[in-house]
Image (cartoon, rainbow, N blue to C red; front, side, top):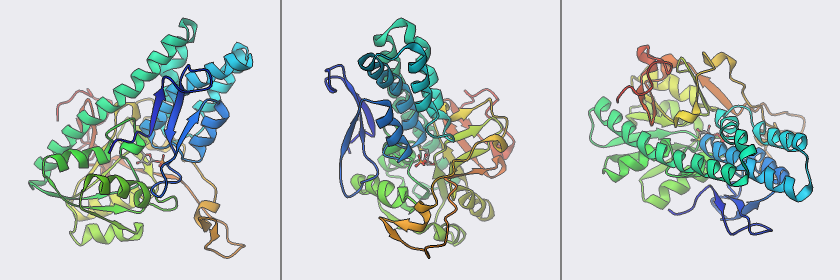
Length: 350
Ligand SMILES: CSC[C@H]1O[C@H](OP(=O)(O)O)[C@H](O)[C@@H]1O
């Protein structure tokens, strides 16, 4: 699979100075459409609509979004104060994934050094993310095979944490790719992940493209799939990992974690270190994005509830550290359910 969720196209854009190109994930898997974003409005709208999504990809969107704002500001004659406000609009486009703000903050301080320094830093964020995802995938695959004692794994996934959610390779799905390359994937049960169906639309698209055996299941099937012994582990991504190992991830992850705990199988969280928020002592302070209820009460414009029925739509939940067997980043493996925290030496070897 060659598609990238997000990349800087150097010869694109109105003035040939380059443009931020994303693969529009709102229309996958039926349509492959790329959007060239050269305004802050366009980028913020794409982030809000989940045309670009996934914590690591949002980190890249934040970093390269500073270049988008700088270029638009030069075209539009913004002063420094306006530019700062527009960059903040990108930074605050979605609250839960720490990566978006982190990506902006990696780059905005370089503005006094000029556009090339800013662009170079943004490109480095993208390259570092893909490298981190490949390393964490290797560490996670090693950990899972050792922990389960099996040489082929049946895996449950939730949402999409693949190359579509990153600048390349993927995190949770990167682990599945790594296992598949080793001939160590027996089967993948992919939760459809309502209401926006990231699992059914995006994870299935990635797994099918790689020829990885899988099936999509309704989210409500996850607990019984786990407790019936049909899977050996669950592997998920993350949007923000607190210092103590509490994990914010797509709504429904907590239910998967509870079932894994009851079944005695590991829940592994795969994420680059840019998803770790050591300033957040535990998950109680993580802001959970509340999205439009219409995402719950309609699908493809068709209402599925009575007109008067509102939708309740928290986009994420927080899984307590005691239910997280491993958090795997490119720096190593931490085992929160065994009492370890991310605040310890993050280079602890797997
Ligand atoms: C590696 S992606 C991390 C995370 O982001 C997704 O959320 P969204 O689709 O709303 O951006 C989901 O929680 C993934 O697990």
